[in-house]
Every structure is written in structure tokens, then in C-alpha cells.
Image (cartoon, rainbow, N blue to C red; front, side, top):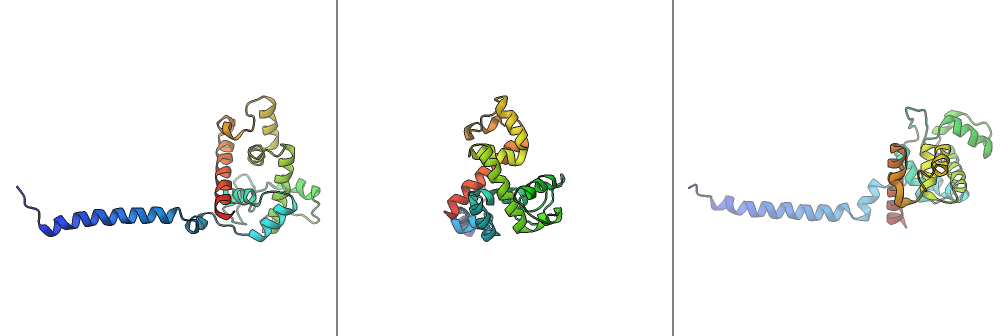
Length: 192
């Protein structure tokens, strides 16, 4: 039978205690608001507040969408061609520019944070109005298209209730709505 040296025997409990200590401290730090705010920042806060207020949108919803769409990178561009912080498609943005109106609009302006946030907030407000203030429907229409959401409602595939997100027909839109709602909740918890 092999004999355990006393120094090694003492170091095993100390190591276990150190690991436990680090796990507890790490857990406490991870869930502290100041650490969480690192993962849920609010860049462009003044612009978000300005245009969310102008178009009567919750700034935390706008922030959650920007986080999900572009990770706050103004030069973000999707494979499909969506551009800027709120990932607006050039065709949609051209329509929005005519509605606001935004004189002298060019697709390159979508990389300008102020222009993109202004147009994105207007568009969200437009969708929110169309879908009677229903936030999950608004988010789904922002990602999956208002025509698709209208069809889902007409065909009773999804009612727009948060409890029935699993019924959203498009997997990408389903994941997007869940993600934005999660981020929206986190922003309210951290910044309210």
C-alpha cells in the first residue's frame, strides 16, 4: 500500500477549497450588474433615446434589436445586403426615406448611426402600429417580413403571443424573436 505524503494530503483539500472559492466568486461576479453591463452595453445611447422617443418606441427594444442585428457595428452588412446598426435592407430603407421624408437619401447613408437608428426606429414604430402594439409580432415582422406575419395571422399559424413562440413558422425568425425578447428583458433589468 502506497503511503500519501502529509504535504500532498493537505494540498488536495486546499485545492478543492480554492476551486470552490473561485467558483462562488466567479458566479457572484458574473451575475453582478456591472459585469452584465459589459455584455449588454448601450453604444449610441443618445441617438437611441432621441429617435425612440420621437417615434414612441421603447429604447430598450431598439437597443436589443441593434445588439442582435449588428452587435453595435455601424459598418455591419449581411449576406442579403442589410446594412448598418439596425440592418435595414436598401429597398426597405428607400421606402422609409420617402415616408419620413429623408431628403437626399442614398444607401450608403445606412452606415451612418444617426440615419440608421432614425430609420430603424421609424420602421419599428410603423410595424408596432400595424400589429396593434404587439411586441412579439413587431419583432417577427422586423425580421421575417410584415407580409409573412400577416399570412401567419390570417392562416392562424401563430397568434403573436409570447407563450406560443414555438409556433413561429420560420426557425430563423423564431430564434430571432426569442433572442430579442431575452435581450430586451436584460436591458430592462440592467438599466431601469
